[in-house]
Image 1 (cartoon, rainbow, N blue to C red):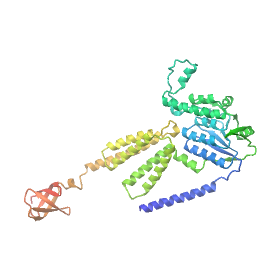
Image 2 (tube, one colour; image 1 turned 60 degrees about the horizontal axis):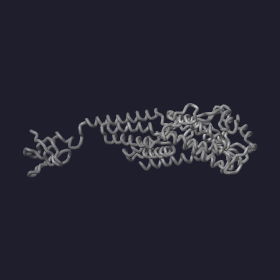
Image 3 (tube, rainbow, N blue to C red; image 1 turned 45 degrees about the vertical axis):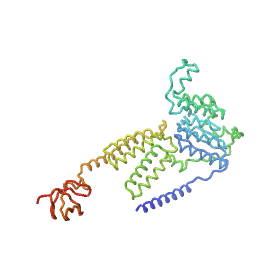
Image 4 (tube, rainbow, N blue to C red; image 1 turned 135 degrees about the vertical axis):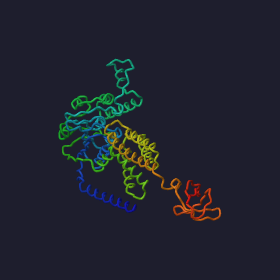
Length: 458
């Protein structure tokens, strides 16, 4: 049965792969013409999926000898690690990369500001903004003014805007050095870039152009290409003239891989996949031979571990979740009347809350999800405890405890050896009174393989 289930799962997975591959091939866009401008879109929070999409898009554009890459941005920011992956790909690009904050109402906040500074050309549409690049996890605590500086005094102001702890200062200074380096590389306003990191400053498009943070303002893509045609940018030490008058536009939307990565790297999805995987394996180990829970659990757990590998996971939180589930499983298999189960539930909830090591809301496990799974686990736990208590008060049906006060009949007597038949088996019997075949006795103790009995009166 187990082999049949496994074969069915493998065949089904193979069929789905063939169908999805055929669909992807049939729906794949036609290859772009050489010297086309590739347009990539960065919408929403910066994370592993967006980084994978943008990095692969830049690599593919370079392989196709594109004229340039246009990145349309509208983001509130995101993970530092994903941002740095994208910026590294932009800096290594052998073709021009144009960053364009659009449409009206869009923003390039936090990680988007860093990316805007990294691109060869930085442009914004009217009614857009950028800035607020302070690292989220260290953006609130500040030290008091202990240097005696007054408002407006350079030293006093710096002291007030510096985070309090050594780690906070370290992270802030690292981000400042990073964005100043990008500003100096592209010839943009480095002082305001530092202010965006230290103070969370923001700018409108017109003010950003006035301060030299961006290169131009364009109402749409056509105006953008018209304005930048004829400009030169430096790429790997050489000047490259921009001319998009005859270039076609190839829009490279996120493919199935990016969409799949976006789904599994959602912290709530990864969290639930991990729990499904662990529960499936626990069920398989406690009820071996079925197959499907184990196969499904292993697949879900592997996918979840891949997602956690690219997400900012707290290993202390992950360890507490595993410990909690282990204690709950132990409670189910060898009940301790709540000690292991309740402790496991507490560890599970605490680990779930601290699982994601970031203060970015988009990469936190939602508390309603944690609460729902904790309540479900608690209900199952107390159901197991209830069954254990009922079993504890139920009379024993086997073993020495179940044999006491039961009656047996003497079947054979050989000198000093007396044998009685009980539950179809012959037992040696010891009694204070003489016995003969046919006597009825009552068991009141079991001494090894000997029944200690009292003779019943006829």
